[in-house]
Image (cartoon, rainbow, N blue to C red; front, side):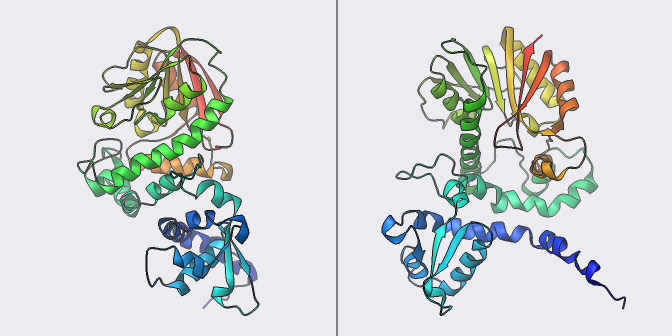
Length: 367
């Protein structure tokens, strides 16, 4: 057998990270489902916002939870920047440790509940990404590659017989509810950043702004909240609008973006185009063009991919691969420019969405 020196053994560290990379998220999922971050978040100042293993266990919906295993999970996640572990004695007994939340956990992994306002919570989005239905296609990517680019719906449809986007035949199932909640939680974070940085809406300017593929209206609600002079239109498929809540200043409109889009001064499209191939994107953008009056503009929130592999664009590349699983893809700057120009829009301005390094704001005017 060939001998390997220290330099060769250094290769084990990055390889180990790749081999075990899915594991941390699944252990985090377990404590999120157990609501451990929520339980710790309710600890008051008298406990220094920390709880012991016994105190956490007393709040779990079980008379006899596996505390030893839970303690090992919490200890591991303490190394991943989720929990802060502190020892009250030097015995090493797991029951002598207390657990608090890191700033990351407080911001993103404490739920947005009735009595807990956390606008940046990503709990629903995290659970959506790590739902069994979402994860299953990842185990069949090799099949999708072998079948070639003609497979409508991507690897997702190979596994589930229905595609994203589209209406699941199991409209009331857990994954569909998880998908809607997950998208809305991510939308809340994105839109708080968008309305804080986008300066294209002038004070007092009365505009009709239509959000294409707006789901239950979370995105357009944020725009109208920040700019009350805007009349917001949330546009989506009938079965989506059917369950959309009433939102002040927002009109829900049923329809199909491949057929027509309600008339507007501004069309807003957030993370919709990456679900579709180039022909589908051009059709959607052409309908946006028809819906707009003279000098109307379209605002798109999507990822602009780098031309070459770059570690700084790792999240963008992951989103691109996930989009392909549903039959879509992300695009680089030149590809986006071609789509907009082909659809009758120019010039295209591109800005980065602050704090969300995986997304950009693309804006173009009706030519």
